Length: 279
Ligand SMILES: Nc1ncnc2c1ncn2[C@@H]1O[C@H](COP(=O)(O)OP(=O)(O)O)[C@@H](O)[C@H]1O
Ligand SMILES: [Mg+2]
Image 1: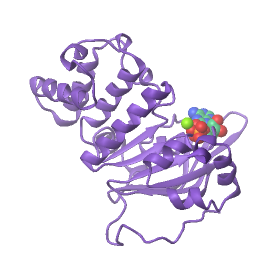
Image 2: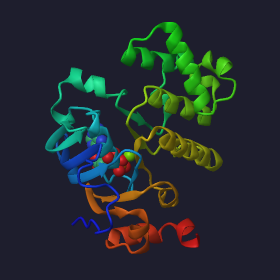
Image 3: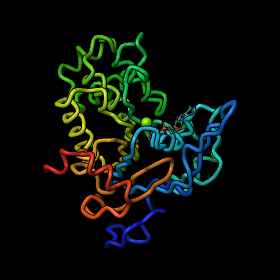
């Protein structure tokens, strides 16, 4: 059961969420079994807002996030029900061509491991510039200038030097910054970050999250932040949705949910996070 708390809504009724997942269900149809990875999940996020999605491994967080841009491998993935509305359009029914325009331009994703997204054989600056050319058709020189500015904006020192380097020449933290630059260079309105800092050491994690928060403020983006770190949620998110076994078991303002968790699973998650209790 989902419990959405009655709090004063900072978003008036006429201002629709930018991204709205509505009763989404996703199956993985395997040879001998069916995994009901996402079951009747509803989530929404407004411009300028951060929605955190938490839940233990296997609870359906990534499958939900990947559904937004239909990036789950299909087969075995089948979208069995629901709608995903962005700006009023249902992304699940768009043609591949229409969805291609939304991907990367309006909605961008940041993943845990930049090495899976960055081309190891291409210089990182060129990869940022290419995303921009793909979506805007600007000239090579303009794209280069914008890519340099993007590398600078995500806090990469000596962007001119870094621009010409290959992914393996960068540290994990710098690679993650490049991926964020790639995601944000087109000025998307929604960013979905799936455990973006899990592979990094603790101090670098903090820097990357601070970076995401500052860029969100600056560009008024809607952010969906998937994490298993409840301390991060407490510091960065406005609302939180708790997932368990493919379902959203609880959602609401972070402070409300963390102070007075209504769901037993949420209470267990909170109890398993000593950093929060100490705070
Ligand atoms: N490509 C896939 N093929 C088969 N099963 C998958 C695939 N992706 C995810 N699953 C299954 O769907 C469920 C939810 O997975 P996932 O969304 O990745 O969880 P989370 O991100 O919360 O750790 C799990 O049972 C997982 O094994
Ligand atoms: Mg995941």
